[in-house]
Length: 16
Image (cartoon, rainbow, N blue to C red; front, side, top):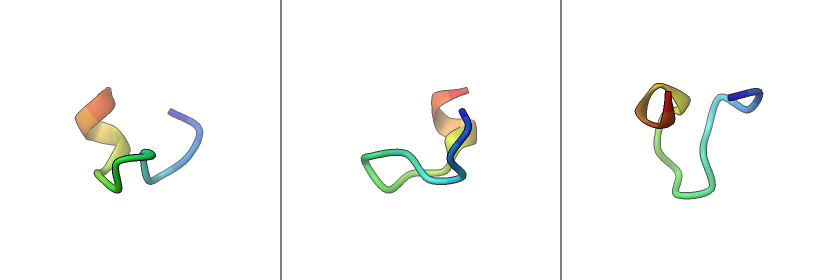
């Protein structure tokens, strides 16, 4: 949630 991009390259909002 700290990073704007997740390891998958998706937006952090995707991970919530």
